[in-house]
Image (cartoon, rainbow, N blue to C red; front, side, top):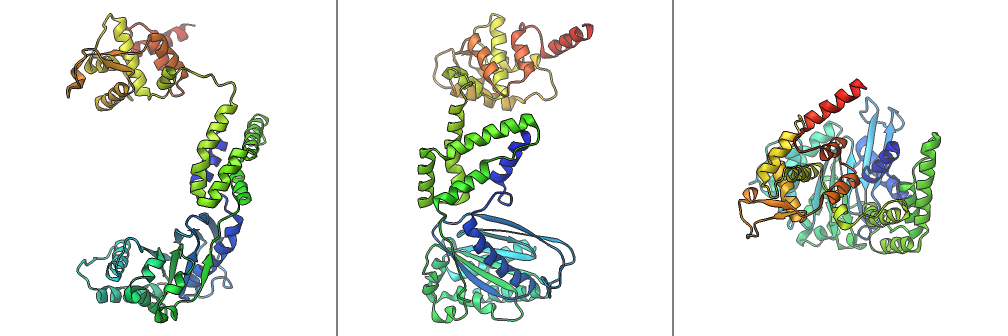
Length: 440
């Protein structure tokens, strides 16, 4: 089961391991060829990624290459390298012999601030001194020198312009003109990638800017509902292990996933996602709660506890320790007690190297007050000296015992400590249990 959980976590949180939409493979290949030409063959490129917001998935692809004169002619590869890039209509990440700069049309309102941001990101990445007072011309010269140095070291610069249409709507389009003009120089090695949700973003360019643009456009379309369903099945279905016991659990889990995908409510949810936002992260976040509710309802053997027991089962280990300490104090005929006395009982009863600090215990004490599992016994208004005010438990011993049994994180030593009289410490309990087992 641990292996199955590891596979699911890897698919859900690691974009390199998660499956991809088949409709995005062609676009992935086009971007791969573009970056390969820029890095390996020192060819300057520009392109536009167009499509509705969230229409294309994050595509993770890892290609492993060995040194090959036919594939890497003119490049400087001396060992096997990993190429990893993640693309979407709004996000782009490419890692291998490159320096990446990201700009956003919503954040960089004018050309001067945008070029200053380019210089700043390059200075931070390469540990250079950045001048805030530099003018537009000085930052442009700095970028030109950086591109020349990159070309000498066989390193490419990737400039990603999010909300490309906003850059194109600015007067004179000086930033776009200068960036695309730098690509015309044989001493530079760079790629300019524009990302926009407007399909006519290239029509907003001025004539002098359009003449320097490569006219390469990559269109992303939202995947159909059937492809989203296949994506969910590829993510959630776990492989069947050779072990008979594990195979039985895997087959049962996969059968529930298949039944859930065939439900009308699931199909309606997938259709909504296909119409609104079909990015992988939004798909996983949207269907996860629905799937958990379905799996929870299919567990007929799971007992339903009262609200108080459920609240106790959701508490942390430290909060359960504090409630048990209060129970032990009441066994000593103390109807009320302060936080200090509760924490002292916890320290005296649980003498261990991994005990919690007083500051952490006070936070847990306040959380118990917020959950109304304990309350002040003096009836006064809220005071700043809450750790000195007497409190009492608002639950019974039976409810606390059932909460300890229902808690999935309650340690066995805490359950044993709960059942012992108040004058025995945890250290004495463990020692006594060890001696009894040794004599037996």
